Image (cartoon, rainbow, N blue to C red; front, side, top):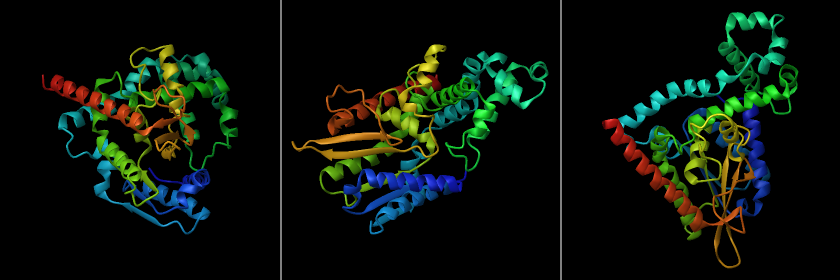
Length: 341
């Protein structure tokens, strides 16, 4: 729940790269930022801004972290109008979701799939199998990888400890397990409980679209509006905005469909702690406003037939999102009726 020095360093690097990519934007005026009040989010915001300032110390900056902004940056957890039924559903879902994906996928993992790693951490892997059982072995296998991967100040380039312990096939298996967990946790389409919950994302969308509209009209006093929240909100945001492969499209199918969903482009390499979505506005020679979206600084695409992709007309992007929100609202109403019955 905290931010290590490595995290601060990475956010400064993201800030510097973002400035380099959009220098002509940041040099034109002030930026503003709003953050969740959790300290790691606040420090992330300051670190990102530090990166911008390292490139241009004269950029005017207005940044805040206040309780009243939580309904924007943490909409599904801090939305005041959320019925108790939805909150109860989500609380119970969070307690049960581990069992779902574990039963669907983790239980299918065999000793042979983990043999390389286990033989390196114990001199008697067969005894470990007989005394722990396959289900608990899978937890040892996955949790050890998870601990190594998220060890404090562990960088992607410091892979020796992983490659010494896990084969490439085993690393891929751990990736699948974590990705499937993310799909269950934050995907929406096809899962009524999560669809109902995601419908409360509209305060963030109102804030995002409001800033875009005011920029188009020349009324936005800032050249960039920054929001800093928790990494777990990236996936549902991608779903609500409608980007390709971002929703849980494979729910309940199992087997190869899980792997297809877990390795979809929009998941990126899981959802990194410094996950970021950049929505950038352009105006072409015809006067049309185009929108380009970058997930973790790489282009992502909308389900729109367009010769200029990943540049889409602003009206088209807005319509995709509004249609999604309308669909989620219907799903919420249907689900609440079922709960009351």
